[in-house]
Image (cartoon, rainbow, N blue to C red; front, top):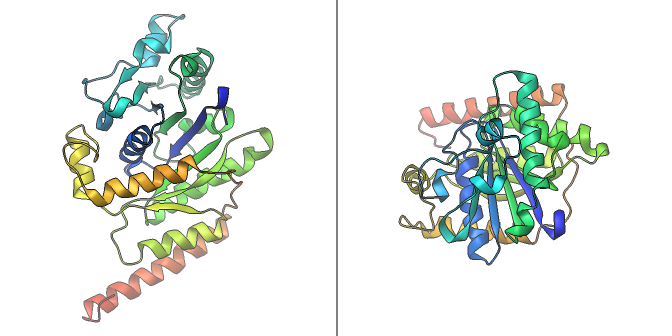
Length: 290
């Protein structure tokens, strides 16, 4: 548990893997289950929590902090569907050193402001953007407040490498009080081999998979319209899956230190699955099916 018993968790994954949709819909699922939730988006896009709020572009905390050194995160918090609160950190400066410091400063500003207690929160969910786990958005892994980090990944080798890189950073920081892995959330599970690949990676890295989400037009369409699957455009199966994920998050026990693959094992894993992909394509092209 975090400050005053609040659970602070983060979602990581390479760009385009669906972190925003997953974190937004999970936030709503938790809120509908009776929890008070703040969704914090850490990234360059000022519309990255659009799928669960209604009021257009959100003012960002870093913009406010650059204008006023005594800025309060309360000034940029907005409410959304099902009572979920939202806060956008915004874009850091282009300079690498300053960007690291700005992200740390934004996280510290939020955590030290008393905002969590004033909102009487149960969960703070950080949606962390960044194309690779080695980018500057992983600074909170080392210096952030999270108890658990959940990685959103697809059954693509690029996604595997990004998740493995994140696991390596978490392992390195595990002795310094850094966050640990809460589990994997698999997204875009549309290929016949998808679940097998994700399960193989999870087993090899001593992690677990909490949910498998299919590639869904309904989910993408609802995000485009600035909604979640719980409102307007309702996909019953997706709603149920997010409800199950919310229950798993709510009953989640201790997070673990992962066992990332070394460089040789990453290569072997990639070669094994590339071979399987080629075999599947050959069988399909011959009319044998997969």
